[in-house]
Image (cartoon, rainbow, N blue to C red):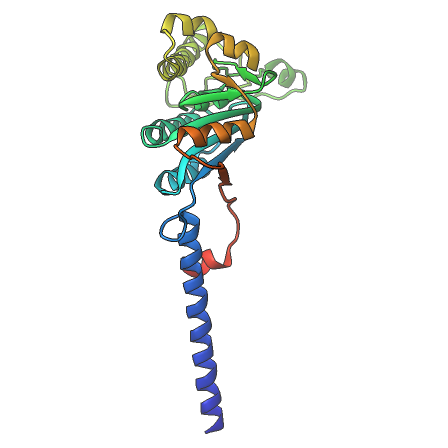
Length: 270
């Protein structure tokens, strides 16, 4: 009888604890989304750092701020030299969709070049420091040829392929003029996408944009003169500016997107 009562007590306690944890998790989730329990107006900050190899985290953070009624504007803090084309285009597309609903300010840090600037071009306003490294509007592919080296050490490589251009860029043979022409056409197409998107977002005539998009890097000061940057300012200035653009009247407060990591409550709530 005693063991049954003990078992029943443990079961009730366990259910109560799980209920409390679940309820706490729901409340915290609602607080985080700024819905019923959070009425304070804030600016959401999304950081884009390092080489661009994946877009999922940035898009997830942007979408969360888009759906959060307490977030009145968004700051994109960019410290990136660029990277892969696909992730940059995916993030830019999300920025373009969100800016119709909420103001977005791009804050350029130490380096916001190539794909980093590509993303920034979609914002309503771009801010940089005078010494920020930006621009580098262009596309590059680099290849290495080790054919001479492998012959010296007595190694020989050959390819079996189905498809005329399947082994273009292999380091084990000299690239033919036809190969170079094919790859150049590919690069030209990506380059035109880059230039056209930036020209459209920045409202710069395409002819002028092509003179700016020669792969050159600019300081923030040079970029402002060229029309690639709107204002000077650091991250704090960008947050303040975004808050005013978003209609915040009092003190502008910011919230940074949470970093992905293990969370017991997230695990518990699925």
